[in-house]
Image (cartoon, rainbow, N blue to C red):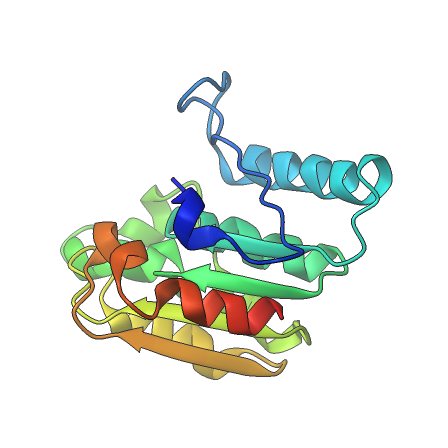
Length: 176
């Protein structure tokens, strides 16, 4: 959820959506479906709302969607919050005894796309992320082709990263 007071940036509007199957949204959340939704929302922003500069902001699982969108559509930039290199590598960390490469249907392999994406990227890493250890975000950051900025929010955890003092100022500077 976006904190309205914290998110106020002159000239910036936010288009927020629920993943399929979450909130007020219906359907099944899959990598294919979430990317399809992102493409529809991008087209809506550009063609219907006539937005000139579109940024994709993806948090956690949404970072995988934002990276896929960035690989397929022109964007002014990408903001990745608590991102990961691939869902497979995160799952392998938690389940080293399972063949997750063969079991996981939705891989969200951002690491394989990053070296081909020549767009500006802001990577916001929760320094105390208990769900997606910072090493996964660091690998994605290092592989990114385009210009990039990183902010490690040292005291932040996965679910409170947006409360970190530098979270919104970092985003404001990036979109300015």
